[in-house]
Length: 248
Image 1 (cartoon, helix red, strand yellow):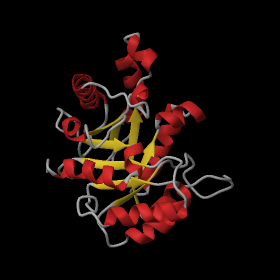
Image 2 (cartoon, rainbow, N blue to C red):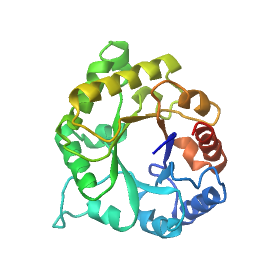
Image 3 (cartoon, rainbow, N blue to C red):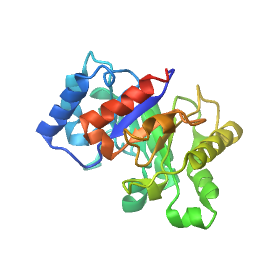
Image 4 (cartoon, rainbow, N blue to C red):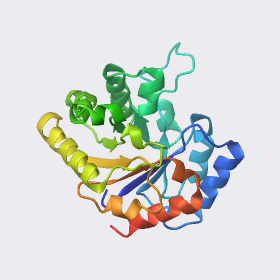
C-alpha cells in the first residue's frame, strides 16, 4: 500500500455505545475513511464494529491474537480465524504492554504471527526499548532481540511498529533524529536477517498527536503511525489522518 499507514490503538477503553459513536464520527470524516487507516478496538466490540465498517474503506484491527492455531479447549482465547471471520485486517502482536503485563516472549509472538498470517491477517510486530535500556546504550540490541521472530517467518506481509516504551502515554516523544536512527536500523536488520517479504514497513508509535504527526510522518523511513491516546478523540485522529493523506 502506498502512502502512510495510520492505526489507532484504543487499548482497554470505550464501551459499546462510545465505541460505536467513535467509529461513526470517523466515518463522517473523508480523511479517516481511507484504506490506509485502521482502528484496533477492544475484542468485545470487534464484531459490531466490523459489521459497521462493511463496505467502508477504514480497516478493522485487533489488539491481540491467540498463540493457539486451531479451535480447542483454550478458555478465553480468540483465534486468528475468529478475527478473520469478523473482518479484521490487522492485529497487533507483542505490544510493550503485553510484554510487560503478560510476559509475552518471542516463541509466543512467533506463533501469534504465523497464526495471523495463515488467516490472511497482517500482523503488526511491536518493538521498543525502556528508558533504562536507552540510557544504558543497549536499545539497539534490545530491538534486534525483539525482531528475531521475523527470521522465522517464511512468507506473508507483516508490519513493524517501533514504540519506545518511555514515550508511550507519557507525553514524551523521541526526537526526529532518534526515530530516523531506529527506523533505519530496523529496516537494515530486516534486509539482512528476515526472510523475504513484500515490503518492510515500519510505523512509529509513542505519544503521536495531531501537533507532531506531520513532522514524524515526514521523517526518513517512517511508513506510518500507531496512535494511542489521540485515537480516542475523533478530531485529533482526523488531523493525524489528514497529515498522512498529504504524503500520498
